[in-house]
Figure (cartoon, rainbow, N blue to C red):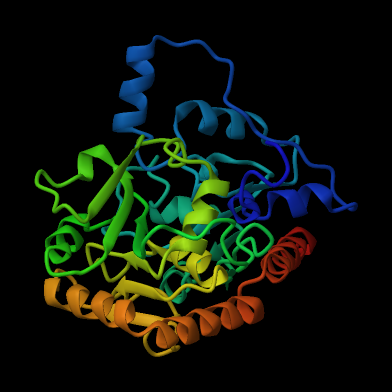
Length: 336
């Protein structure tokens, strides 16, 4: 990817690991084993449905004995219990929703116990996965060079509020609230989540399902962050989910207030920490009041935005994130 066109926080520390002079690194890619497409789909649906998939799992297992450690940014792997020598450290975001009994499920307790370590994005994840292997809670980070908090290159024609993202979103509640809001609501979301009837003040920009940035590029997203009054993150209200975390940090880095549905999983709270409002799940009136409040009170919006930037500069830097990862991996490698 061209430098500067993709946020560095989406590398999940892989660039720091690659640049670590003490380690020789390589990327595990899909295996080149050929199987019928229908068989591959069945394997992924029935056996590897909660993992990166058959081809990646097979390639990782095949590399056993040739490498010292696998760093998995896509969650626990399914075949770890069958590894002979390779250590596996995986990222985890939340406790599993149910007990996994299938032996190839990555969240089966035997697979989890075979891991040598877990990097946990939330304290809830740490509390759960630390019973299986050494674990470390590492808060997320944000690329503060791309999302630099500077003014927009061009001022908007009229004030607007911005919402984006696809996972765990509740755009229906936000759209219902828009009818009583005296400002434009600009939503970048998947077409499948688009409500049937949109009020005139809702501007919906369709995205593809994957990747999430095909509708607009990140530089345009950064400009829209800079132009908007505040950022809206309407969520379904799953108490264990991390949805909206990245969106929140990007908005904070851009000095924008954050209005977000309550999350019982994140350790940071827009309202308690002074950079926005927290809204109850499905609370239409809560969205109306919060948005109209900031639409009228420009000074408060500015103060919340500056508070958010202050927090990310202190607690959510890529440098801190990468250092925490490298220290943990070195500790695991040094264990006999």
